[in-house]
Image (cartoon, rainbow, N blue to C red; front, side, top):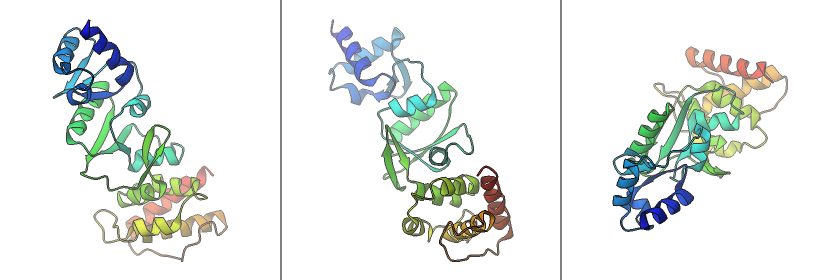
Length: 234
């Protein structure tokens, strides 16, 4: 009787989400025992060290929306939302503040055949906002993050498609002191150079930034290719 009631409540509250023993102790103090029994019967799936999941047919985006644990979609995954999936990727990048959850969601994703890259931080270092049921790195933060990791096309596609909503003062603040990985080049310098190319190729002053040039040829070439890829689909 108590087990059935526990199972019903569990499904109502946590179907489609990962949950830990501590999450459900408030439902019943015998939660650990009940979860063990339900996992034996296959009604609950044990994922990793005290983490469970009620088997349910879901695609990756449904899981990300339904899962009740705090996480932020970041970098190229956030960019794919802001730039309408300009570059489709099957790798999903997340930031979390719970090491135990990080281990569980990585194991769960592997079991599901999904590719998750999960960063653990004591406090999420990226600016983010809630959109529907998801927390997503803001366009400005996302652009800076992508540029810093050489994901130039993701960044400039986001910059172009969200151009009317981008706060350039905020973008400058977020990128001014960041460097492109393995270089001494500032992210803001790269952004200004890309804006210059977009203005030139579109034949209009779409982005009001001071003209900026680059001396680092490999970065210059890759930003040029990224801008050309964006322009091709305008």
